[in-house]
Length: 251
Length: 350
Image (cartoon, chains in turn red, cyan):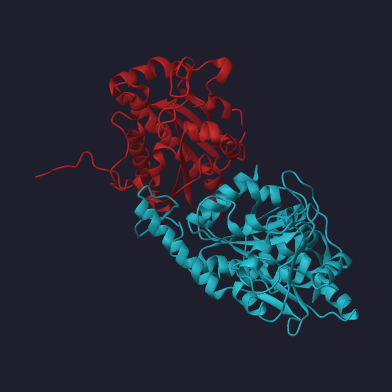
């Protein structure tokens, strides 16, 4: 007989089987978001806007109303939802190709308007779904299927630090960069996600959590190696931490 | 009570009276007055106006707003409409209702800012990717544009489709006395059992144009096609003037049809009876009626402010039963009544 349930699937997940590769961090982040939605008691008024990319099915994985936006346009779609129904909690879930390449205009202007939405930004330094091409966040020297000799700054420019870039905008309420490679990091990431949603609930403006994530399949590494590579390379170029926090000023 | 109104502003006011409280847009000539009017008028009626960073963002904001079940619109002109094509295709696939006003200007490319009808193909045949359709309404006076706004929103909601008002720079910029319909309650719209309102006490709803399984995507497409068939059966609209016993019928829409109305009087003085066939719905196009009319005349002349776009639909409708010559000028040049009269005479050998 079960005396006490200590862990279960969050109510905010639909229970549909994830389509992610072994060792990919999307699944962890999905669960964290769902736990946060459960804890904040906002499931029945939350709307998700999924992106184009590996997480294109995200709107099916969450037990909330939702849609999937054209590539990169999730912040604009979320803007339309939030403006039409300000009582709803609206979040976008976007990868680096979606947010940092094709969708730069939409994310910058949504943030700059202080659009009262939350964005969860998965940065794995590569285009996952299309087969491992260079992303704007691909590190210098990193080999991808479109930078077979390694990313060269002369030809491809430099990896974009989105959290830093967006933190210059006055409409932003909260930005933090996290990773989910260890249990401690997972706890920190969950706290960041919760803070971002809370900022929206309080109506403080735009909030974003960037999660440095692995893509073992396209990196050609085992899940363990991928986690190590992330900590040793990505976390150096993309420092973890809080970039904007206006939640205290607001109190 | 009639009021003197600029075309763009009259369309904006009519949209508000049709219960639209959400406008997203990006400035572009020759319709920026519509955007500006919305920015001052919507706050007065508790609505939301947002100037987007681009037309690409505009259409996606409409996508999001429409997901919630609210009436939403934008207005733009040709290059802006091109930028919206991506979102239009996604909205069509997601079966999201919304209204677009395209005040067409000369093209291609940057073109100019004068009136044109050269975006007929784009509006009626696609423009975005995939097998989708949108309802296209073509007013020829400001009063008609006002009257069509109510219909546009109602058709969008009824069929869960996109509706485009295809106007041109002439209609957008001119002023005419108009009578507005009464203000409708924005909440007095049919219940939308698909809208994303939060999964409270029901399973979550999803709006999507996406399915990875081709047989499932085919099912979605067949559903769209069934809707389009219903629209083709029930929503064809056109105006006929003087077609009975005419020496020649001229097919024209929008501003061009209005010029043809002048030509009818000019031709009468020269003993020529000119009929006008004016499609109001460019999609669904009134093929059937045109085919019947083709039995009654030798010649159906198409006149457009383009180099012959609606002409292709006229020829499909006529189906070889009558001669189908064409006269048109484009690029922002509007044919004069005299030029059209000359084309009429040439078409009937006078």
